[in-house]
Image (cartoon, rainbow, N blue to C red; front, side, top):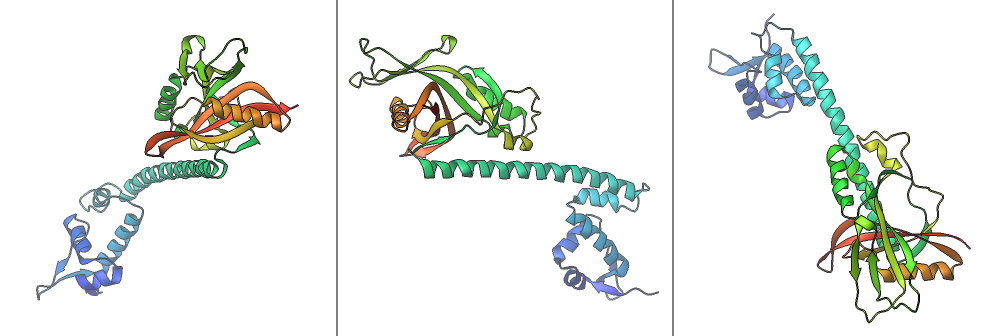
Length: 302
């Protein structure tokens, strides 16, 4: 039976593709045009059927090199076997891409939530709990926390969503021993110190204890990290006063902590000596790099 003949323009219109693409497929050996007596190049119904198969496989994002191998008539191997192998590889690639896409969405939602909280609760003190989280690392030195964060994020996909928490103990000095409004961080091998002008006097002192890496439990499914069954967790029933603020330093400002203590006393809450600090993100404010921070001061009903 004679087959209908199609010129390149007919094929382009019928298939919804450009002439250049058809010519490119010819150069790659995927199609072969016939030449009529009048010199025109044409394609047959068999060529169109072949092109339909090629276009469908392209929609599965199978590369042109793989397609050329699949449709090579000189190759005696079974193209179905080759196609199955290629599709298995493509499936693995697409599934990995889906997982990475889910991680990206999770990062976006997490950061959006932090941004909205910073805007809604900036400099406001409120009662809350630390998000239900896994303690991936504890008892880290002050300067080791960021390094450990980068190590985990490099080794495990998705662990870049961890938060770095610094823990401090509130202490006071006696009135007989004047203390500049300062922050003295001293914990053995983790010793650090920073001070403000001596003209501002205060008896509040923060002693740095340790740093920890926290992973919110609802983010764990988006990581490659296998959470140990015996890993310690935060206590969602524990109450804290919290505040969002911006700072050019990762160390909590004493005046912010003082405001939290005053708020606790005013509202009949007993504040403990435990204070946690975490920076949610970094950015620019007032043309200077800053930390967007959140503090947690442990409290209980009086």
